[in-house]
Image (cartoon, rainbow, N blue to C red; front, top):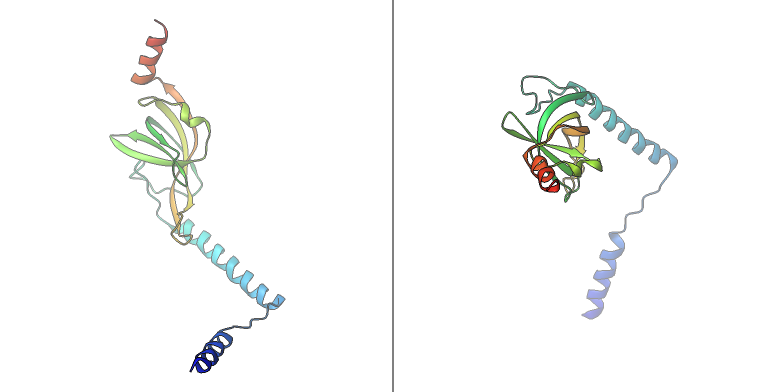
Length: 156
């Protein structure tokens, strides 16, 4: 009986082995498929109606830089993408960012931000392509309450 199980096991193991040949022709076909998918995704992105809470009545364009004055709320660098959260018209907006100097702002500071709509790929989502606000630059225009309080404490 053991011999029968061993024979069945070996038969299953050898029959499951798939023998694919890697040739330049197969590689070329795969490369063409991948580049076609990228071209289609880029073409589709140009046709999208991109929207943002910062500009709700405006159709946004991919990669075009926009400028807005906002109030700084928070910086969170704990995820795959760092989030730079701001407030405008009592609505919160989180920008994705990879800028190093954005940690210096304090809650309530008024900023002039340059941002754009760009692609992101969410981790764990199978490389699913999404579009979101990316922070390009941020410059302080006016000190907020926290910054003013810290300055007054340092002067005493």
